[in-house]
Image (cartoon, rainbow, N blue to C red; front, side):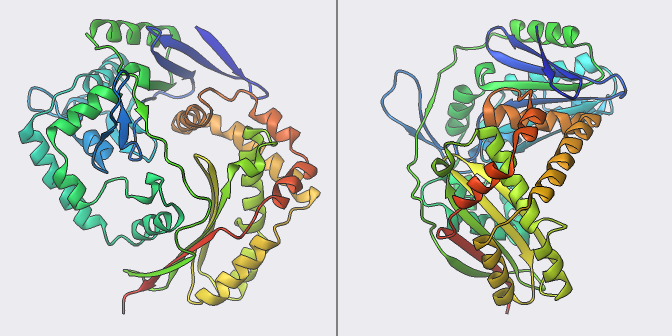
Length: 425
């Protein structure tokens, strides 16, 4: 077993590859009682076109199928559900589907082996039939009907549809009612048999555990399963244009005051000379300094009562970086003007940079007080870099004002999308 030391923090993450197939990452914390286990599958809502090794033709499955499969996977062969199983231990089981992956997770304070074994069992033991698919289809459609008017959801996915032409990020994770209606048992089985394999998964266990016992238990569990050979699927690559779909779109929703999102769509190639780990950190620092809770702009907009809420983030999506500002305002024109002006004149001083770097280092240390937080941090590392980043503190300390200004100079505002969710008339 490999021990990965997180430099500067005195923390250790244990790594092993189970059966030369599934990576497992373990963080031990003896100060807590609970254990948080996350079994992640590299299959999300954007993965709709793929071909299996040895085949020439691409398969196309309905949008939302990753979410549909997540629901179905909780059914057990004896007519119960995984939720029923975990209830006997007082454990919490749940799952979520994102654009990029699906994750099944369990929080337990006792019977750790049984809880972890069953996580592997219900995810890796398929049980699907037409009756189950039809039942879950109706449940999902009912959920979609309830969710379609949630303002944040409508604004989020409308905005992504304004940003992306080809990337499937422009579709909702759940798919539409029509997508769910046309999803068949054969579609579900094709996706499960192609992607739900240890070679396409990773397991993260954080909490009060013995890493060697965890690895032994997982090895025994996987060994007992008669798993088919991995199909080694190849995903269809989409060539996404640099320009946005719509510069500005206004829609109506269940809001009292207008809500909006403003995003810059930046080709990642513009920053290819910057270390990829440091680039993410630098963008976070830039966003925080210019649009964060203590930024001059937010304070000004709040004082002038031009906004009632503002948040900002950066996202790395395949070949692009999104710099996004979300806000609620009664005065959209004035707010947009102020945001645009700030985007054209991004700034940070050396003093402010040092302060924010120190705050980031402090947060890095504090993250290791929370087993769920560490689990999520490891998930982000694996999805972004396919490995644990063991020198984040070193990267933060290496960020200089010159590097930050180099990035700011390459931020172009010409590819910008604005989406406004107005109150219904």
